Image (cartoon, rainbow, N blue to C red; front, side, top):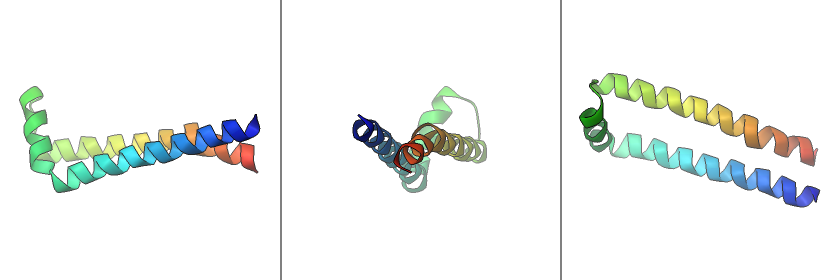
Length: 77
């Protein structure tokens, strides 16, 4: 049972980091497109949008570490 649980946490950690990497690449490579989509919904300038995205990525990364990586380490060590 521990092997299944630790594998679940490892897969969740890897999937989360994969999604965060995709998010980061979209911001870096296609920032103009992302800004054009978001500026239709919300009134903001590009600097504010980038700040919001980077802070959200930091929170997402912290959540991945707390919800997946730390339980994985606790089960495997």
